[in-house]
Length: 386
Image 1 (cartoon, rainbow, N blue to C red):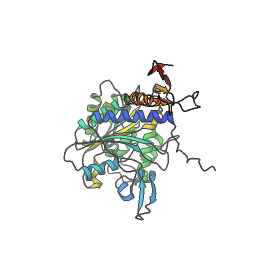
Image 2: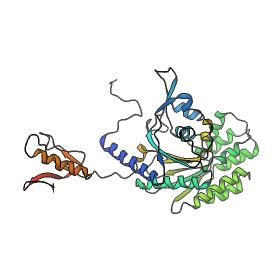
Image 3: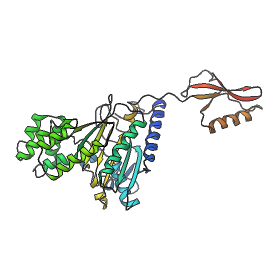
Image 4: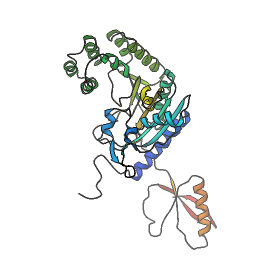
């Protein structure tokens, strides 16, 4: 095997795509800043017990582990940034009021989370701590929509659910974690026969409620059907009422519901959402409420947010045109060289891209699509069209 062959599902990002990814990253961060979100930069690796505290088995299996050569302690490369941001809110900022935080950086997965996915996503996210009301959930939804709109994603659908619906149905069911995971997988796959087999020993109310969930997906009529067919417990009623309120405030957005959806990380505790567009293999954005995420750090604050993979996003957005640039000659030692350098510096200071053509490379094509040139005319350096 060649020494330069990369591991499976790990890839270099070449100039054209890298430029596009960077443009999207800036637009996402600028959009979050427009809502008042502050940028944080958690470390890529941490002591393992800190990184995985409270995150559950799913993230444990997705986390690369290594030994710190300085301390001998086990360390991990983050597979998700939300637990780190919860730690920052709990221990470093320690604010009493609302904290709005955003981030954008790589995460690493031991396995791709779906076919053809990268194991090195570039994760962007925004999180709001300190407000338990639905206003925070709505802000997260609106910010996520605006982020996708800023990157020119079209034909969006917001799909909504609530973690309390499935949890209410499973409350009191005696089953181990692997069995419950199989039930959730059958719900996600809408596999009625598998679900019937897995729940054959469950209490009747739980069994019938879970079977009803399989068909509870679609438009707002789903919420009315859920009120009729699911047990009238307080947590269920609150979850359905919250979904109705949130959907009613997403004016102009295409909204659907999938009340059986439990995909994503296990820390969600309330309303959750995913955003889709045609051409994407999976949801572009996943988010929701995760009030318990900070409890393991000793400060259990209300929390809501979302995240996305910028590398996945770049595959579905309209390709950006190359930035027009100016081609300049290379002069060294001539009397015009100082004036040329001054002219180039002025153009770059004004935001222009100026590419100096090195000797012998005048006919090469460059990435920046030069449509003008800097040339000497009547004793002055001027920009002319090519």
